[in-house]
Length: 104
Figure 1 (cartoon, rainbow, N blue to C red):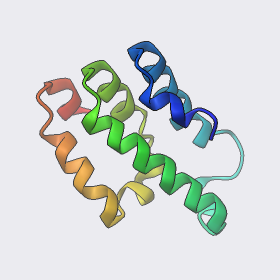
Figure 2: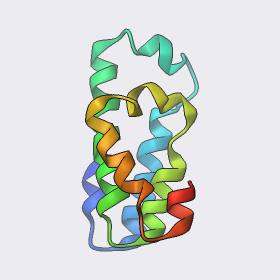
Figure 3: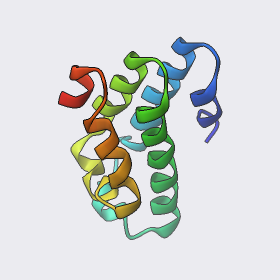
């Protein structure tokens, strides 16, 4: 994705916009994620982007960005987020130093 490199930009505003954009691009109108899960190419893309977003959600120094990412996880992502490789990051987010991030 063209937006992904901006997740590591030095400017926090750009990282925040990139995180918001990545998650919302995955939720574009059209077939549900359940139906698209059968498409391995799409599934690989979603998994890769969610892994990057999860990394941002626990590693970004700006709590506003971490919160934006966590709050962008729509219930349609649940199947992907429940995969073993993603659970560790979710547990780390549950222990974030900022309460609204833990709550999200």
